[in-house]
Length: 225
Image (cartoon, rainbow, N blue to C red; front, side):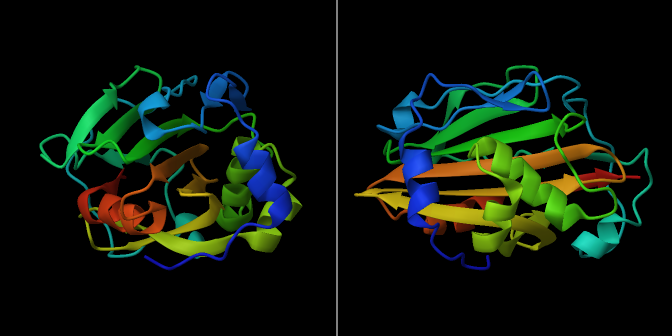
């Protein structure tokens, strides 16, 4: 996974100020919640038109860059492949809520990984630009202008089709608050009108960036034409 730069003090403070019960709107009724006092307090996300149907066998190339995202069919089905379901190092914190969100936690209670997949119809995405639109998702999660996110975010990768493979370009930011670290990564697919994100939040342990590497080793983005 490509390492990220630290958020500006403004964005670190914005993230630290979020309380666990605060809902951050994404795509109208779509929400994400970020814990501030510990991973055990993660809450589920919810959203309209979530992509939670079973996936068919994937096909395609080995990468899905921002540019290659423009080559997807408008009817392509995109979702997370769940690699933590049978992983003994992780446990369910909040199960699939039926609206595109679920959260896993490490068994030592130091980290959570909150996943979401669904429609982004009300996010201010930029048609034909998956990178800028991914920044827009992060901006909604952090309640920060997209331009401010673009200034500090870096490009990373989710795994494509198989865990540990990399290949799906993302936009991501990281932050710290004492011994708490977090990283969030998002990918918008503007040709299909859907998006994915994962928020890793750790207090102690190996930290959020190393834990994000574990997330990408076990979980992959699955695309069905």
